[in-house]
Image 1: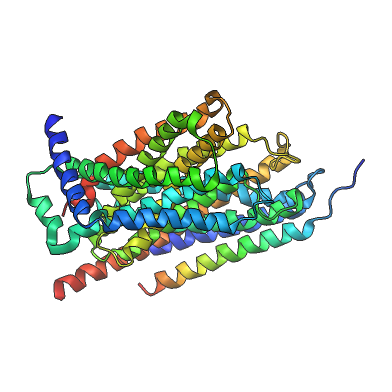
Image 2 (image 1 turned 90 degrees about the vertical axis):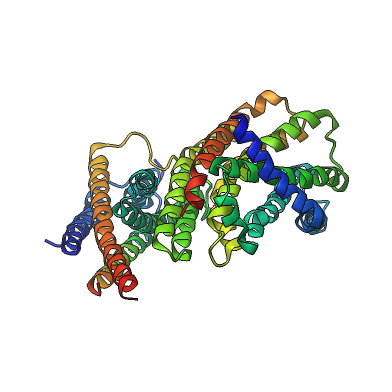
Length: 226
Length: 36
Length: 226
Protein backbone atom coordinates (compact mmCIF):
# COMPACT_ATOMS: atom_id res chain seq x y z
CA UNK A 1 0.00 0.00 0.00
CA UNK A 2 1.41 3.41 -0.85
CA UNK A 3 2.40 5.77 1.89
CA UNK A 4 -0.49 8.09 1.22
CA UNK A 5 -3.08 5.38 1.40
CA UNK A 6 -1.59 3.96 4.56
CA UNK A 7 -1.67 7.41 6.09
CA UNK A 8 -5.27 7.92 5.04
CA UNK A 9 -6.34 4.62 6.51
CA UNK A 10 -4.64 5.29 9.84
CA UNK A 11 -6.22 8.73 9.97
CA UNK A 12 -9.61 7.27 9.20
CA UNK A 13 -9.31 4.70 11.96
CA UNK A 14 -8.14 7.43 14.31
CA UNK A 15 -11.10 9.66 13.46
CA UNK A 16 -13.53 6.81 13.99
CA UNK A 17 -11.91 6.07 17.33
CA UNK A 18 -12.13 9.76 18.19
CA UNK A 19 -15.83 9.72 17.37
CA UNK A 20 -16.17 6.82 19.76
CA UNK A 21 -14.32 8.82 22.40
CA UNK A 22 -16.69 11.71 21.84
CA UNK A 23 -19.70 9.49 22.43
CA UNK A 24 -18.18 7.85 25.45
CA UNK A 25 -16.99 11.11 26.97
CA UNK A 26 -20.15 13.06 26.38
CA UNK A 27 -22.76 10.42 27.13
CA UNK A 28 -21.21 7.61 29.13
CA UNK A 29 -18.64 9.19 31.40
CA UNK A 30 -19.81 10.65 34.68
CA UNK A 31 -19.91 14.39 35.19
CA UNK A 32 -17.34 15.67 37.63
CA UNK A 33 -19.15 17.13 40.58
CA UNK A 34 -17.04 20.22 41.27
CA UNK A 35 -16.36 21.35 37.73
CA UNK A 36 -19.47 20.18 35.96
CA UNK A 37 -19.68 19.09 32.33
CA UNK A 38 -16.91 21.50 31.29
CA UNK A 39 -14.40 19.19 32.96
CA UNK A 40 -14.87 16.81 30.05
CA UNK A 41 -12.83 19.16 27.91
CA UNK A 42 -9.93 17.58 29.73
CA UNK A 43 -10.33 14.39 27.65
CA UNK A 44 -9.36 16.29 24.52
CA UNK A 45 -7.15 18.99 25.98
CA UNK A 46 -4.60 16.83 27.77
CA UNK A 47 -3.89 14.20 25.07
CA UNK A 48 -3.50 17.04 22.57
CA UNK A 49 -1.04 18.75 24.92
CA UNK A 50 0.94 15.56 25.37
CA UNK A 51 1.31 15.13 21.63
CA UNK A 52 2.11 18.79 21.08
CA UNK A 53 5.15 18.32 23.27
CA UNK A 54 6.03 14.85 22.00
CA UNK A 55 5.93 16.10 18.43
CA UNK A 56 8.44 18.83 19.26
CA UNK A 57 10.78 16.37 20.92
CA UNK A 58 10.56 14.17 17.83
CA UNK A 59 11.35 17.16 15.63
CA UNK A 60 14.47 17.72 17.73
CA UNK A 61 15.53 14.09 17.68
CA UNK A 62 15.02 13.89 13.93
CA UNK A 63 17.18 17.01 13.66
CA UNK A 64 20.02 15.46 15.63
CA UNK A 65 20.00 12.31 13.53
CA UNK A 66 19.72 14.31 10.35
CA UNK A 67 22.80 16.39 11.11
CA UNK A 68 24.83 13.26 11.69
CA UNK A 69 23.38 10.95 9.07
CA UNK A 70 22.28 13.38 6.38
CA UNK A 71 19.26 11.24 5.49
CA UNK A 72 16.58 13.47 3.91
CA UNK A 73 13.87 11.17 5.22
CA UNK A 74 14.64 12.45 8.70
CA UNK A 75 14.19 16.01 7.53
CA UNK A 76 10.86 15.19 5.89
CA UNK A 77 9.70 13.54 9.06
CA UNK A 78 10.70 16.59 11.11
CA UNK A 79 8.76 18.85 8.77
CA UNK A 80 5.68 16.67 9.06
CA UNK A 81 5.92 16.37 12.83
CA UNK A 82 6.25 20.13 13.19
CA UNK A 83 3.14 20.83 11.17
CA UNK A 84 1.07 18.24 13.02
CA UNK A 85 2.43 19.52 16.33
CA UNK A 86 1.23 22.99 15.42
CA UNK A 87 -2.28 21.66 14.74
CA UNK A 88 -2.37 19.96 18.13
CA UNK A 89 -1.04 23.10 19.79
CA UNK A 90 -3.93 25.00 18.27
CA UNK A 91 -6.33 22.53 19.86
CA UNK A 92 -4.74 22.99 23.27
CA UNK A 93 -4.73 26.77 22.97
CA UNK A 94 -8.39 26.92 21.96
CA UNK A 95 -9.83 24.29 24.32
CA UNK A 96 -7.75 25.70 27.16
CA UNK A 97 -9.47 29.08 27.38
CA UNK A 98 -12.85 27.49 26.71
CA UNK A 99 -12.21 25.32 29.74
CA UNK A 100 -10.67 28.12 31.76
CA UNK A 101 -13.57 30.52 31.44
CA UNK A 102 -16.18 28.51 33.36
CA UNK A 103 -13.68 27.00 35.78
CA UNK A 104 -11.44 29.92 36.66
CA UNK A 105 -13.55 32.81 35.45
CA UNK A 106 -11.02 34.12 32.94
CA UNK A 107 -10.28 33.13 29.36
CA UNK A 108 -6.56 33.00 29.82
CA UNK A 109 -4.88 31.52 32.85
CA UNK A 110 -1.14 31.29 33.03
CA UNK A 111 -1.37 27.70 34.12
CA UNK A 112 1.55 25.38 33.47
CA UNK A 113 0.13 23.47 30.53
CA UNK A 114 -1.33 26.43 28.67
CA UNK A 115 1.80 28.53 29.11
CA UNK A 116 4.09 25.73 28.00
CA UNK A 117 1.94 25.07 24.95
CA UNK A 118 2.02 28.75 24.07
CA UNK A 119 5.82 28.68 24.09
CA UNK A 120 5.73 25.51 21.99
CA UNK A 121 3.38 27.18 19.56
CA UNK A 122 5.86 30.02 19.08
CA UNK A 123 8.62 27.46 18.59
CA UNK A 124 6.62 25.65 15.93
CA UNK A 125 5.76 28.90 14.23
CA UNK A 126 9.40 29.92 14.05
CA UNK A 127 10.40 26.50 12.78
CA UNK A 128 7.82 26.51 10.00
CA UNK A 129 8.68 30.10 9.06
CA UNK A 130 12.36 29.27 8.72
CA UNK A 131 11.49 26.28 6.56
CA UNK A 132 9.37 28.51 4.38
CA UNK A 133 12.01 31.21 4.10
CA UNK A 134 14.94 29.12 2.89
CA UNK A 135 14.89 28.13 -0.77
CA UNK A 136 17.72 25.67 -1.05
CA UNK A 137 16.58 22.23 0.19
CA UNK A 138 19.94 21.23 1.67
CA UNK A 139 20.32 24.50 3.56
CA UNK A 140 16.69 24.39 4.63
CA UNK A 141 17.06 20.93 6.11
CA UNK A 142 20.19 21.88 8.02
CA UNK A 143 18.81 25.14 9.37
CA UNK A 144 15.59 23.43 10.38
CA UNK A 145 17.55 20.72 12.17
CA UNK A 146 19.54 23.31 14.13
CA UNK A 147 16.38 25.14 15.14
CA UNK A 148 14.57 21.91 15.96
CA UNK A 149 17.36 20.72 18.22
CA UNK A 150 17.41 24.05 20.05
CA UNK A 151 13.64 23.90 20.37
CA UNK A 152 13.74 20.44 21.85
CA UNK A 153 16.38 21.53 24.37
CA UNK A 154 14.27 24.52 25.32
CA UNK A 155 11.35 22.35 26.46
CA UNK A 156 12.78 21.46 29.89
CA UNK A 157 13.59 25.13 30.49
CA UNK A 158 10.05 26.11 29.66
CA UNK A 159 8.82 23.67 32.27
CA UNK A 160 11.38 24.86 34.79
CA UNK A 161 10.46 28.52 34.31
CA UNK A 162 6.78 27.83 34.70
CA UNK A 163 7.38 25.57 37.71
CA UNK A 164 9.51 28.21 39.45
CA UNK A 165 6.99 30.90 38.76
CA UNK A 166 4.12 28.88 40.11
CA UNK A 167 5.81 27.54 43.24
CA UNK A 168 7.22 30.91 44.21
CA UNK A 169 3.97 32.70 43.40
CA UNK A 170 1.18 30.51 44.69
CA UNK A 171 -1.89 30.93 42.57
CA UNK A 172 -5.30 30.94 44.20
CA UNK A 173 -6.14 27.47 42.99
CA UNK A 174 -9.84 26.92 43.16
CA UNK A 175 -10.00 23.71 41.24
CA UNK A 176 -7.30 21.46 39.93
CA UNK A 177 -7.95 20.93 36.25
CA UNK A 178 -7.66 17.18 36.29
CA UNK A 179 -9.37 16.79 39.60
CA UNK A 180 -8.35 14.25 42.22
CA UNK A 181 -7.11 10.81 41.13
CA UNK A 182 -9.29 9.69 38.29
CA UNK A 183 -12.04 7.14 38.83
CA UNK A 184 -11.79 4.19 36.47
CA UNK A 185 -14.49 5.20 34.06
CA UNK A 186 -12.87 8.59 33.47
CA UNK A 187 -9.44 7.04 33.18
CA UNK A 188 -10.63 4.67 30.48
CA UNK A 189 -12.14 7.51 28.47
CA UNK A 190 -8.92 9.45 28.80
CA UNK A 191 -6.81 6.50 27.68
CA UNK A 192 -9.00 5.94 24.63
CA UNK A 193 -8.62 9.59 23.78
CA UNK A 194 -4.86 9.36 24.13
CA UNK A 195 -4.90 6.40 21.78
CA UNK A 196 -7.00 8.31 19.28
CA UNK A 197 -4.63 11.27 19.35
CA UNK A 198 -1.65 8.97 18.99
CA UNK A 199 -3.17 7.41 15.89
CA UNK A 200 -4.07 10.85 14.59
CA UNK A 201 -0.47 11.91 14.98
CA UNK A 202 0.78 8.85 13.12
CA UNK A 203 -1.80 9.14 10.35
CA UNK A 204 -1.31 12.86 9.86
CA UNK A 205 2.47 12.63 9.89
CA UNK A 206 2.40 9.78 7.38
CA UNK A 207 0.28 11.77 4.95
CA UNK A 208 2.25 14.95 5.47
CA UNK A 209 5.47 13.03 4.95
CA UNK A 210 4.14 11.72 1.65
CA UNK A 211 3.37 15.29 0.58
CA UNK A 212 6.96 16.34 1.38
CA UNK A 213 8.31 13.30 -0.44
CA UNK A 214 6.41 14.18 -3.59
CA UNK A 215 7.47 17.82 -3.38
CA UNK A 216 11.12 16.82 -2.97
CA UNK A 217 10.88 14.49 -5.96
CA UNK A 218 9.40 17.32 -8.02
CA UNK A 219 12.16 19.69 -6.95
CA UNK A 220 14.92 17.25 -7.83
CA UNK A 221 13.32 16.55 -11.20
CA UNK A 222 13.01 20.26 -11.92
CA UNK A 223 16.62 20.83 -10.90
CA UNK A 224 17.81 18.10 -13.24
CA UNK A 225 15.83 19.30 -16.22
CA UNK A 226 16.25 22.98 -15.49
CA UNK B 1 -24.62 19.56 48.66
CA UNK B 2 -23.85 22.25 46.09
CA UNK B 3 -25.31 21.95 42.63
CA UNK B 4 -23.20 20.73 39.75
CA UNK B 5 -22.26 23.84 37.68
CA UNK B 6 -24.31 24.29 34.51
CA UNK B 7 -21.53 24.82 31.99
CA UNK B 8 -22.30 22.21 29.35
CA UNK B 9 -22.25 24.93 26.71
CA UNK B 10 -18.50 25.31 27.12
CA UNK B 11 -18.00 21.58 26.86
CA UNK B 12 -19.94 21.46 23.62
CA UNK B 13 -18.04 24.44 22.24
CA UNK B 14 -14.68 22.85 22.98
CA UNK B 15 -15.68 19.52 21.47
CA UNK B 16 -16.92 21.25 18.32
CA UNK B 17 -13.81 23.40 17.98
CA UNK B 18 -11.56 20.36 18.32
CA UNK B 19 -13.57 18.43 15.75
CA UNK B 20 -13.45 21.35 13.33
CA UNK B 21 -9.69 21.72 13.67
CA UNK B 22 -8.99 18.00 13.28
CA UNK B 23 -11.42 17.41 10.44
CA UNK B 24 -10.27 20.59 8.75
CA UNK B 25 -6.67 19.46 8.86
CA UNK B 26 -7.58 15.95 7.74
CA UNK B 27 -9.40 17.36 4.73
CA UNK B 28 -6.53 19.74 3.95
CA UNK B 29 -4.06 16.88 4.07
CA UNK B 30 -6.37 14.69 2.00
CA UNK B 31 -6.53 17.32 -0.69
CA UNK B 32 -2.81 18.01 -0.66
CA UNK B 33 -1.96 14.33 -0.88
CA UNK B 34 -4.36 13.82 -3.76
CA UNK B 35 -2.63 16.34 -5.99
CA UNK B 36 0.76 14.72 -5.53
CA UNK C 1 42.14 25.82 23.17
CA UNK C 2 44.56 28.70 23.05
CA UNK C 3 44.30 28.68 19.28
CA UNK C 4 40.52 28.82 19.54
CA UNK C 5 40.68 31.84 21.79
CA UNK C 6 43.22 33.55 19.60
CA UNK C 7 41.09 33.08 16.50
CA UNK C 8 37.93 34.09 18.32
CA UNK C 9 39.57 37.24 19.55
CA UNK C 10 40.72 38.03 16.01
CA UNK C 11 37.13 37.82 14.78
CA UNK C 12 35.79 39.78 17.73
CA UNK C 13 38.39 42.48 17.35
CA UNK C 14 37.54 42.86 13.67
CA UNK C 15 33.88 43.39 14.49
CA UNK C 16 34.64 45.75 17.35
CA UNK C 17 37.02 47.85 15.26
CA UNK C 18 34.53 48.03 12.42
CA UNK C 19 31.80 49.09 14.77
CA UNK C 20 33.94 51.64 16.56
CA UNK C 21 34.71 53.25 13.23
CA UNK C 22 31.09 53.72 12.22
CA UNK C 23 29.37 53.44 15.58
CA UNK C 24 25.98 53.27 13.88
CA UNK C 25 24.59 50.17 15.58
CA UNK C 26 25.91 51.17 18.96
CA UNK C 27 24.55 54.68 18.83
CA UNK C 28 21.15 53.59 17.56
CA UNK C 29 20.91 50.97 20.32
CA UNK C 30 21.81 53.48 23.02
CA UNK C 31 19.43 56.09 21.66
CA UNK C 32 16.73 53.47 21.40
CA UNK C 33 17.28 52.46 25.01
CA UNK C 34 16.89 56.04 26.17
CA UNK C 35 13.79 56.43 24.04
CA UNK C 36 12.11 53.30 25.37
CA UNK C 37 12.86 54.21 28.97
CA UNK C 38 11.45 57.69 28.43
CA UNK C 39 8.37 56.32 26.74
CA UNK C 40 7.70 53.87 29.54
CA UNK C 41 7.70 56.73 31.96
CA UNK C 42 5.14 58.69 29.96
CA UNK C 43 3.07 55.63 29.32
CA UNK C 44 2.21 54.94 32.91
CA UNK C 45 0.10 56.64 35.50
CA UNK C 46 2.48 57.46 38.34
CA UNK C 47 -0.31 57.38 40.88
CA UNK C 48 -1.66 54.00 39.88
CA UNK C 49 1.12 51.43 39.91
CA UNK C 50 4.11 51.59 42.24
CA UNK C 51 7.21 52.08 40.10
CA UNK C 52 8.97 49.16 41.65
CA UNK C 53 6.40 46.74 40.25
CA UNK C 54 6.99 47.69 36.66
CA UNK C 55 10.63 48.61 36.88
CA UNK C 56 12.23 45.19 36.28
CA UNK C 57 10.01 44.52 33.29
CA UNK C 58 10.79 47.91 31.79
CA UNK C 59 14.49 47.39 32.26
CA UNK C 60 14.52 43.99 30.63
CA UNK C 61 12.25 44.85 27.74
CA UNK C 62 14.60 47.71 26.98
CA UNK C 63 17.68 45.51 27.16
CA UNK C 64 16.04 42.92 24.92
CA UNK C 65 15.13 45.42 22.23
CA UNK C 66 18.64 46.81 22.30
CA UNK C 67 20.12 43.32 22.08
CA UNK C 68 17.94 42.59 19.04
CA UNK C 69 19.28 45.67 17.30
CA UNK C 70 22.86 44.57 17.83
CA UNK C 71 22.17 40.96 16.87
CA UNK C 72 20.66 42.02 13.61
CA UNK C 73 23.88 43.60 12.49
CA UNK C 74 25.96 40.62 13.62
CA UNK C 75 26.03 38.90 10.29
CA UNK C 76 24.58 41.53 8.03
CA UNK C 77 27.91 43.23 7.66
CA UNK C 78 29.40 39.96 6.49
CA UNK C 79 26.97 39.84 3.62
CA UNK C 80 28.58 42.87 2.05
CA UNK C 81 31.37 42.11 -0.41
CA UNK C 82 30.96 38.41 0.35
CA UNK C 83 32.94 38.92 3.50
CA UNK C 84 31.34 35.82 4.98
CA UNK C 85 32.74 33.60 2.28
CA UNK C 86 36.11 35.17 2.92
CA UNK C 87 35.87 34.31 6.57
CA UNK C 88 34.88 30.75 5.82
CA UNK C 89 37.70 30.11 3.37
CA UNK C 90 40.22 31.37 5.89
CA UNK C 91 41.81 28.89 8.30
CA UNK C 92 39.45 30.04 11.03
CA UNK C 93 37.59 27.19 12.67
CA UNK C 94 33.82 27.45 12.69
CA UNK C 95 33.71 27.35 16.46
CA UNK C 96 36.14 30.24 16.85
CA UNK C 97 34.06 32.20 14.35
CA UNK C 98 31.08 31.67 16.59
CA UNK C 99 32.96 32.65 19.72
CA UNK C 100 34.36 35.71 18.03
CA UNK C 101 30.89 36.83 17.02
CA UNK C 102 29.57 36.03 20.47
CA UNK C 103 32.27 38.06 22.19
CA UNK C 104 31.68 41.02 19.88
CA UNK C 105 27.91 40.84 20.38
CA UNK C 106 28.30 40.60 24.13
CA UNK C 107 30.59 43.62 24.10
CA UNK C 108 28.05 45.68 22.17
CA UNK C 109 25.13 44.67 24.34
CA UNK C 110 27.24 45.28 27.43
CA UNK C 111 27.90 48.86 26.32
CA UNK C 112 24.20 49.42 25.75
CA UNK C 113 23.36 47.94 29.13
CA UNK C 114 26.08 49.98 30.79
CA UNK C 115 24.43 53.09 29.45
CA UNK C 116 20.90 51.85 29.99
CA UNK C 117 21.23 50.89 33.63
CA UNK C 118 22.24 54.35 34.91
CA UNK C 119 19.54 55.90 32.74
CA UNK C 120 17.06 53.50 34.23
CA UNK C 121 18.17 54.35 37.75
CA UNK C 122 17.86 58.02 36.91
CA UNK C 123 14.48 57.95 35.17
CA UNK C 124 12.79 55.56 37.53
CA UNK C 125 14.39 56.78 40.70
CA UNK C 126 15.26 53.31 41.92
CA UNK C 127 18.07 52.63 44.30
CA UNK C 128 20.53 50.02 43.11
CA UNK C 129 23.67 50.90 45.01
CA UNK C 130 23.24 48.23 47.63
CA UNK C 131 22.51 45.49 45.13
CA UNK C 132 24.73 46.66 42.30
CA UNK C 133 27.02 43.65 42.25
CA UNK C 134 24.33 40.95 42.21
CA UNK C 135 22.34 43.04 39.76
CA UNK C 136 25.25 43.23 37.36
CA UNK C 137 25.72 39.50 37.86
CA UNK C 138 22.12 38.75 36.88
CA UNK C 139 22.33 41.06 33.91
CA UNK C 140 25.46 39.28 32.76
CA UNK C 141 23.96 35.81 33.20
CA UNK C 142 20.75 36.55 31.35
CA UNK C 143 22.45 38.49 28.58
CA UNK C 144 24.94 35.71 27.93
CA UNK C 145 22.06 33.27 27.49
CA UNK C 146 20.04 35.07 24.93
CA UNK C 147 22.97 36.59 23.04
CA UNK C 148 24.43 33.09 22.69
CA UNK C 149 21.26 31.79 21.07
CA UNK C 150 20.77 35.02 19.15
CA UNK C 151 24.25 34.81 17.65
CA UNK C 152 23.53 31.30 16.38
CA UNK C 153 20.17 32.28 14.95
CA UNK C 154 21.46 35.42 13.28
CA UNK C 155 23.63 33.14 11.16
CA UNK C 156 20.54 31.11 10.37
CA UNK C 157 18.46 33.96 8.98
CA UNK C 158 21.22 35.63 7.05
CA UNK C 159 20.14 34.44 3.61
CA UNK C 160 16.42 34.75 4.13
CA UNK C 161 13.96 37.47 3.27
CA UNK C 162 12.78 39.62 6.18
CA UNK C 163 15.80 38.44 8.12
CA UNK C 164 15.40 40.83 11.05
CA UNK C 165 11.77 39.94 11.55
CA UNK C 166 12.43 36.25 11.22
CA UNK C 167 15.24 36.50 13.77
CA UNK C 168 12.90 38.06 16.30
CA UNK C 169 10.19 35.46 15.75
CA UNK C 170 12.44 32.43 16.09
CA UNK C 171 14.34 33.93 19.00
CA UNK C 172 11.25 34.84 21.01
CA UNK C 173 10.60 31.52 22.78
CA UNK C 174 14.30 31.28 23.64
CA UNK C 175 14.23 34.68 25.27
CA UNK C 176 11.50 33.75 27.69
CA UNK C 177 13.27 31.52 30.23
CA UNK C 178 16.28 33.82 30.72
CA UNK C 179 14.04 36.89 30.76
CA UNK C 180 11.65 35.35 33.26
CA UNK C 181 14.62 34.53 35.48
CA UNK C 182 16.14 37.97 34.99
CA UNK C 183 12.97 39.90 35.70
CA UNK C 184 12.17 37.85 38.79
CA UNK C 185 15.63 38.18 40.28
CA UNK C 186 15.83 41.89 39.41
CA UNK C 187 12.46 42.46 41.06
CA UNK C 188 13.60 40.73 44.21
CA UNK C 189 16.91 42.59 44.30
CA UNK C 190 15.25 45.97 43.83
CA UNK C 191 12.76 45.16 46.55
CA UNK C 192 15.58 44.39 48.93
CA UNK C 193 14.82 40.70 49.25
CA UNK C 194 17.70 38.45 50.29
CA UNK C 195 19.53 36.72 47.48
CA UNK C 196 18.50 33.31 48.85
CA UNK C 197 14.99 33.91 47.55
CA UNK C 198 16.26 34.08 44.00
CA UNK C 199 18.29 30.89 44.08
CA UNK C 200 15.89 28.90 41.92
CA UNK C 201 15.88 31.49 39.17
CA UNK C 202 19.64 31.93 39.37
CA UNK C 203 20.05 28.21 38.85
CA UNK C 204 17.70 28.46 35.88
CA UNK C 205 19.84 31.21 34.37
CA UNK C 206 23.08 29.35 34.99
CA UNK C 207 21.75 26.07 33.58
CA UNK C 208 20.35 27.86 30.55
CA UNK C 209 23.70 29.51 29.88
CA UNK C 210 25.66 26.28 30.19
CA UNK C 211 23.31 24.35 27.94
CA UNK C 212 22.75 26.92 25.25
CA UNK C 213 26.23 28.36 24.99
CA UNK C 214 27.58 24.84 24.44
CA UNK C 215 24.76 23.90 22.11
CA UNK C 216 24.99 27.07 20.02
CA UNK C 217 28.76 26.81 19.84
CA UNK C 218 28.48 23.22 18.63
CA UNK C 219 25.62 23.74 16.17
CA UNK C 220 27.10 26.86 14.60
CA UNK C 221 29.16 24.89 12.10
CA UNK C 222 25.97 23.55 10.54
CA UNK C 223 24.70 27.01 9.76
CA UNK C 224 27.68 28.16 7.76
CA UNK C 225 28.99 25.09 6.03
CA UNK C 226 27.93 24.43 2.47
